[in-house]
Amino acid sequence: MSLEKCDLAIIGSGLTGMSAALAAYSRDPRQIIKIFGMPFDSNTAKKGEIENIPGINKVVGVDYIQQIITQIENLSAEFAKEDEPNKLEFINEDVTALSKNETHFQLITDSRNIEAKTVIISTGLPELKNTIKGEDEFVHKGVSHCAVCDGALFRGRKVAIIGEGNFVARGALFLRKYCRKVTVICQNSTLDSDDRFIKKLSKSERVSFKFNIDLESVEIFGSQNVEGLRFQEDGESRELSINAVFVELKDKPDLTFLKDFALDITENGYIIKSAKNTTSVEGIFAAGSISGEMDYIPILMGDGYEAGISATEYLKK
Image 1 (cartoon, rainbow, N blue to C red):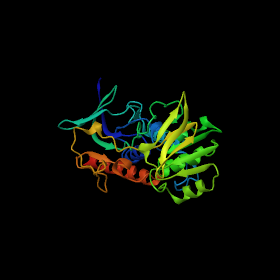
Image 2: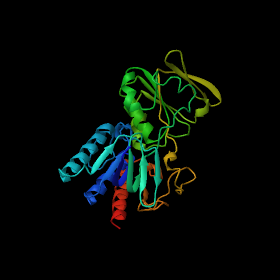
Image 3: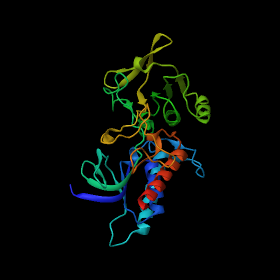
Image 4: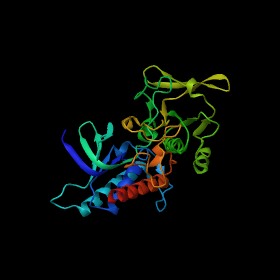
């Protein structure tokens, strides 16, 4: 692998990372920026209809991500020169290792070796997989980890969605459009989402809830495909007949690619950052849900924008 160079490397190409790229490039279009990751695998791309972006009434997550990609590409083209390489580049690969020599950070992907002056980490929260009994056995046979991606495949069927928070609420709202019956399985006493979503869900005759369900008791069963769920409710064994289950659980941040750095993190594994998005390692900035920010589009966008500006000012110094 030949060595490539850039000024700013952004690890994570979801909403937060692309907001950081927009801010940094607008601040100084002379710098070379590389964005790592797959935008359409991001949490924002997997959301259904988004209604909390100021000035935008309603937009589907995947369409919104495409709009931002197009915006970045157009901005890059605006300042491009024929005799210079593209200064703003998407690299659709994950960073597998990050290290540092005396002067630069080294980023390794499956096919590339990049040297950067500074780094923004905005990889978000990964999906928590293989935590439900039978989950791995029935993947692509009725088990999915993205209601928005696969919900329409089960039009007119009975389904369940496991998890909580706004992400699951949006997933349930999306599923109710296609599925005959949607059961939301929560391990706590509430869905822990915005009241606006709960109001919409409570008005739908197609949606029902199961609260205080110990996820360790949940088992997916079937012959060739998913046929149902077994679980404990109020001390009794229950069985739910369904054709699909959407496991929408979020894991702790995946920081394995940062093993060479002694970053300060919280007890729950989130990167600790300052108001200017700096971390305990000079030259590394963090933004978005990987640092514990709430999963709200405007918050994630603003945090990414702040990180992009802070990283650019650091480079100027």
